[in-house]
Length: 166
Image 1 (cartoon, rainbow, N blue to C red):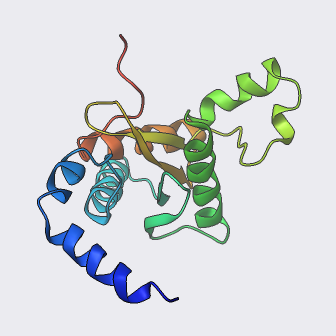
Image 2 (cartoon, helix red, strand yellow; image 1 turned 180 degrees about the horizontal axis):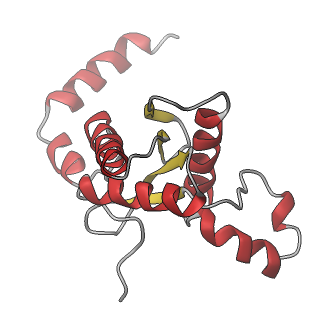
């Protein structure tokens, strides 16, 4: 570490220079806690209007939990399944509802990591649809209701569940 005394001043000088502003302006979108909580709130609001109860898990692009909610009335395992759905959608970049077809059409896909063939997991894309920033998984009701809840949460946060059609 003979050069450690030189590295720290360089890092501080670079950080204080105007060179960081353009880099920050071009930083990729990410799923922050505020956006994840907005997804959870949107899902929960959707569920309440239908007298439903879900486990909701929002993960970042790496599959790490950012926000979760276990609504009243859900039993053991619901949150784990919601998290599995979220991680599957985050890993593969498409909804878990579509994974059933992918399993049928792609030999070996069923044995791949993070494959869930039950609706309720959806990727989350930035508001402009350019970047996949995470995913949401919902469980606790019928799969179609779980999927609708996930979509409602993503929309409530002003984000997209798929890239726009070009």
